[in-house]
Length: 339
Image 1 (cartoon, rainbow, N blue to C red):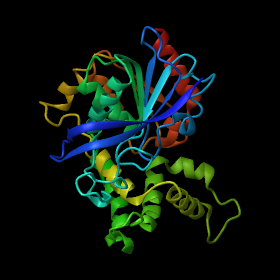
Image 2: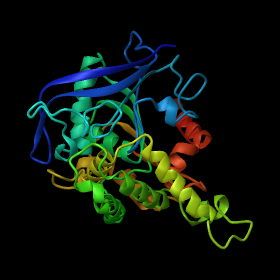
Image 3: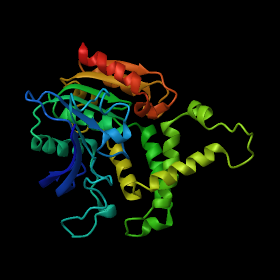
Image 4: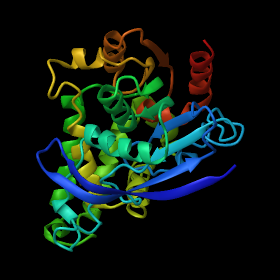
């Protein structure tokens, strides 16, 4: 089944929630499968902060031949979020106003801004209705933003380990990560590689929020009774180095700001009223051990979207459980789509 990677050029100006605007930019996207004659088999997958537009790479247990999101059955679409470094417009792209790279002057997108940009791609692809939208973490934020922008667009929505407003707790984690990047001596330089050493440290902070005490106890215990050079230290260092090989510190800094800006109540009477406009059938999935997006946040979404249901997954892996608990998520999706 054909998998295609494309680039959509947004012509014109997009007004952003920050008060800034951006014009004539690209969105990198992946499609897999074919749009059927009835145009009712579209699945839109939203990726989390540092992933890309090919969900088969970062969600292999859910997307691919024989998986729940099988391209022989669905027309699968995923877009690389603006601000990243996998093809969509971001800090390493040229600002058409100046002819130079945006770098730290990139006008970051809120999740709602991202949804507005994606809608232009939807129209370009000839998609009139989306059968199912799904995303975890920041992917879930984008999904909810789009579902509140266009309440009848999706038949089903499945936000996983997500929230309606990014919490002060989550913002504190992100701020601390940005502090690490900003303290890197290279951050003052106006160049693409600025802040990379700081980003490695920032990633180690993020990992603590993605997992939890039990995860580290299970996977990083020092069975040799080490005095120093512990497994936890090695793991934290390795993960920072690993991210630095595929990501960029300016993008990382920008996308944490994008995440922090998520607030479905902005510009409306309340978050509750905004959620109440959604007409899709909604299954909210939470993870018991998630310390970054705790179950109370998913319960809030469920309580304010009409007819929504909440499913709670038991997982050792904390917030990262949305990427790893394939069988449990598949079971829930089968029940949702066959009811």
